Length: 329
Ligand code: AHM
Ligand code: MG
Image 1 (cartoon, rainbow, N blue to C red):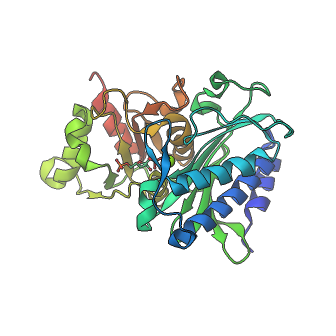
Image 2: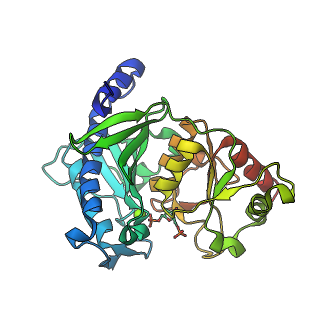
C-alpha cells in the first residue's frame, strides 16, 4: 500500500530526529489541498482576473493571489506553530493575531506562483519555506536567514494532478493528492535530477537584457551540434517556476531567470525568500545545483524580505557550465 504523506513524514522524523516539524507539514499540505480546490474551480468561482490592488513589488494582484494568500495565511496562523509569517503578497511580515499562541517557527511563502497562468488554465503552485524563529516576536531581520538554515522547503503544484514535493534535508519526495480521499500519497520517492540534460528553460524575450555569460550559454544551446555542443537542445518555458522545477526534477533540465538589465533596480525577477531559497533546497537535495551564476543561492545573506536574485538551477553539469562562464566576468 502506498504511504500517505503523514506516514512518510512521521517515519522520516523518527529516522532522522531533529526539530519535529511533522505537524507543520501536515497543516501546510492541508492548506495546499484547499488552495487546489479554489484553483481547480477556476472560472466557476468567479475569481478570475485582477483584484484592485498591487503587491509590494508593484505587481497587480490577481483575485486568486489574494484569495490563496488569505487561505494559506489563515490556515497556518491558527495552528499556533508560528511566531510569524511572511508572504510574497504582503508588504510586511504578518503578525500572529492576539489570542493565538505563538510558536517556534517562521513560515515564508508565495501562495500562488505563476499566477499569470491562472486565467489560461496552465499550472500554478504554492512555494513555502520553514525557518526556526529566533524569538516569539520576530522583526523583519529575524526572517532574513540564508537558505542553508531552512528546515523544510517545498511546493504544491496545481497541474493535471495536484502534487506536493518537499525536503527536510533528507532527499526529495513527491506526493500526489488523491482527490477521492483528500490524502497526499507518496508517488515519487527519492526524486533525483540527472546530472546531464539537453533541455533548457528561459524567457527568450529578455535576451537583449542578459549578461554575456548567459548570452553565450543560450547561444550554444540554440546552435547545438552546429555550434560546438555535443548535442542538440530542446527548450521549454511554462512561466510557472513550480512547473519548471517539477519538470526538471522529473527529467532533468536547466532553468534560468538570470540577472538582466531590464529594470536596473532589480537583480532579476525571482524572490530569494519565497521562490529561490525553497527551490534551491529541493534542487540541491535532488543532486542538482542552484546558483546566481556567481554564488550558491542558499548562502546569500538576505538583505530584504522581497529581495530578488538571479536564478540558474537544475542539472549539475549544465549549471556548472553556466557558472563557469561567469568566472571573471
Ligand atoms: P509570480 O510569483 O508573480 O507569479 O512571478 C514568478 C513567475 C515564475 O513562476 C516564473 O518563472 C516567472 O515569474 C515567469 O516570468 P515571465 O512572465 O517573465 O515569463
Ligand atoms: Mg506569486
